Length: 114
Image (tube, rainbow, N blue to C red; front, side, top):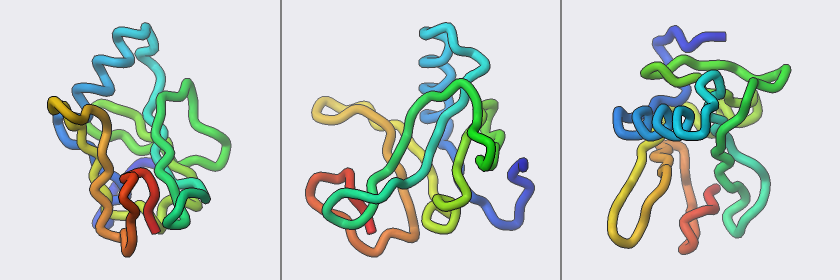
C-alpha cells in the first residue's frame, strides 16, 4: 500500500533519506528498504525498531518517501502515525531519530517510549 494521503503515516527528512540512500549504496543494497516501527519492551512500554531489510514482510505496508522504501507493520501504524524520521550527526550523538507526536512518555535512555 502506498502512502497516498490526507493522513501521513511516516515521513523522512531530506537528511534521513540521503543517509539511508548512502548506506544502501555503500553496502550494495540498493533495492532494500528502511524498516520502522515499534516493538514491546523497554522501561516505557515500547522501543523503536529501525533497520535495513531486503524486502517487506507479508503484512507490511510499503511507503515510498523521497526515493526510499519504508516498511512498517500494521501494529506500528497507529503508534507511528504522523512521525518523522530524521538523521542527527553531532559530536555527541549520531543516528536516526524519530519525532513522534503520539508519544506520551519516554525514558532517560531515549530508546523507550510509551
